[in-house]
Image (tube, rainbow, N blue to C red):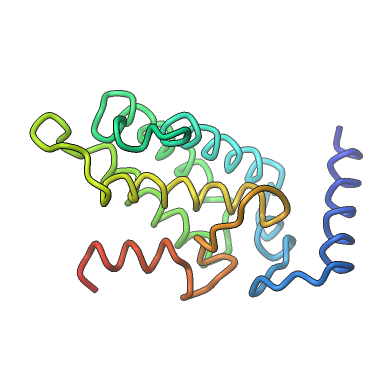
Amino acid sequence: MRKMMLVMGVLIMALLLVTGCSKKDFNVEDVLHDTSDAQKVEELIGRIHSEMNGLVCYFKEYRMAGTREAQATAGAIIKYVEELEPMVKSDALKQDLEILVELVTRYAEYDHLNNPPTEEIANVGRWAHRIAHDLDYRGTKGDYYKATVTFEGEDSKALKFLNSLKGE
């Protein structure tokens, strides 16, 4: 299994070199392998992405905000992030995880009983998912949302969205 993962990593890097990746600072090794256990980091980010898929994908972002399921998912994601923190040395990745936790917490704590779902709260869930998505796939498959500080720096769309929520 490890050999297969190594081969896949080499193939992804070769593909990126051949096709000319245009994303800022896109270097898989700097992002994920700057840890004491890169495979564990990738696994935990994959789990976070899977949790977010279950919560907000397929047009669920409106009806799931503030529900018990959202609160349970937020709790699971926070535990994964807490497990990740000691392994992550990249300041950009740490910032992405902080933004993700803040967005997921806002989404889970939304008062859906007294407030109808809004576009804003749906976007909170969407941007939390997009951070997890971009970190998990590292721009190699599926949609790329430019959501992370890791790949986009201060141009991160999720960072800009969160700052707008805070009035910054």
